[in-house]
Structure formats: structure tokens, C-alpha cells
Length: 148
Picture (cartoon, rainbow, N blue to C red):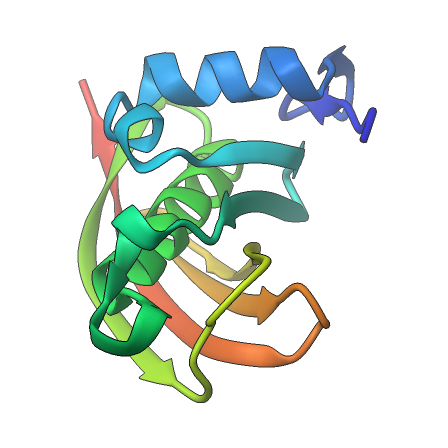
């Protein structure tokens, strides 16, 4: 995929391999997790995680913690791209996950969109879909707006 990344002004600043490299620098845990970036824009961030036996729990199910970590990374990046002027970063305050179906093969994509952008918090909604496009989980996060 050759989607680009847009800065807060909507300017395209990179391609998928560069996006993934930026993701891994900004959030080193995503490199350990094996996440890749497919799309990054203020209105939508899409990250992907391939199914792998090392990321699974009993029965070959992609571990819930891996899904939650992917969603947290997508929601955090989405929040960062929607920061108000003068803000320097974000931190997850709350995260609520509803698991709807297991991921047993293929990959999972996390699509994060801003629900509410305020002066002190950004709320992101993240859908996790399996390789067939079926909704596997839904996550709502509140990200604190950091200053200074």
C-alpha cells in the first residue's frame, strides 16, 4: 500500500514504509509488537498487525493484549494528530475494549478516528477488523492533552 501521512495541516509527508519507521521511533513498543502503519491522517489512522503464533494465546487466538496494544497505538497517534495548538503530546487516560470475535489467522487492522477533540482530552474510537473485514473488537480511548 502506498498511502501517505498528513501533518496537522493536511500535507502529505511520507509513504507506508516511512510511516512504519516513524511509528517505531515514536512508539518503540510497536516495533516489538510487529505493527505497521497503512494510513496516517488527522481523520483516520490505520495500523496493521499480522497473525503470528508468537502473538497468540491458547487455541491460536491472537492475544487480547496484542489487540489492545495495537488499538492504543492507533488511538494515540490519532490523538496526537488532532492536538490543539500549544500541546506537546498525549497519554492514555482510559481505554475500554469490547472483544467481539477472535482473530485466528491473517491479520488485524486497527482504524482509529477522533470522536471528540478538546482542550484537555482527545477521545478516539478504534475498530479492529480481521482479514475478512469482520469487526473483532472496538476500543474507546481518552487521551490526555500534554503541555510543556
